[in-house]
Image 1 (cartoon, rainbow, N blue to C red):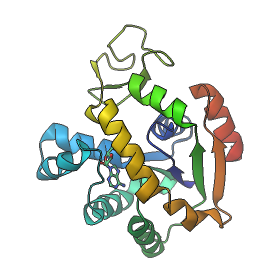
Image 2: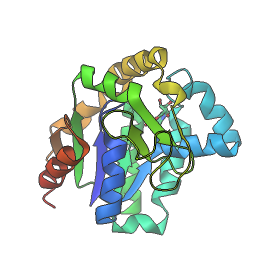
Image 3: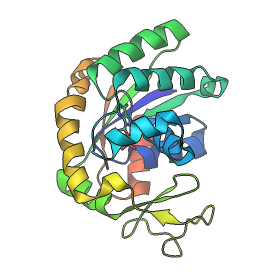
Image 4: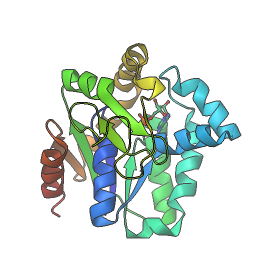
Length: 214
Ligand code: AMP
């Protein structure tokens, strides 16, 4: 299956995409993870992206479209992919359409993760991420066995710079102004699927798999 996970920051897209990759083999394509890796390695892409990310702004469309096309061309996506965090603007959605056509791929579902604003704020403020591979935890809702240490690879957990309250506010504004309108592009189509993304990780996962007919 080829999927788009659509929703606000803290909606649970990354957590669910990682689970689906582990359980079903659909490859997660997280544009945020790709950018964070580029920052960690110190590439020129990383240096450019960081200027936007630290402010909670979007990285320019041309940059993001190039990254996604390159990723979609890799053969591991043939078994299915989950786009997590892309498209985030109308030009990105148009470019994706064009790109999928050219690559001879089709979209099976666009999953709209619906969560209350109160939940988003609680999830983002308690989110912790592992340094080695980006595994996602929450200090209260999904804590690691040992505080501050990743269960999977033992690497230290950190709080994303853009999960601090001032930046979260800006990311929410950017979501409403630039990303939410992208939903209109998909809402009227048969691929559009609503997901109640409130609740615990496993609850949401069960609902998601049911919604996808898995
Ligand atoms: P995320 O991990 O999806 O929350 O993304 C973190 C940050 O990376 C965002 O706030 C943006 O600055 C940048 N980013 C990720 N995906 C995109 C995208 N599709 N378009 C523009 N910027 C992006």
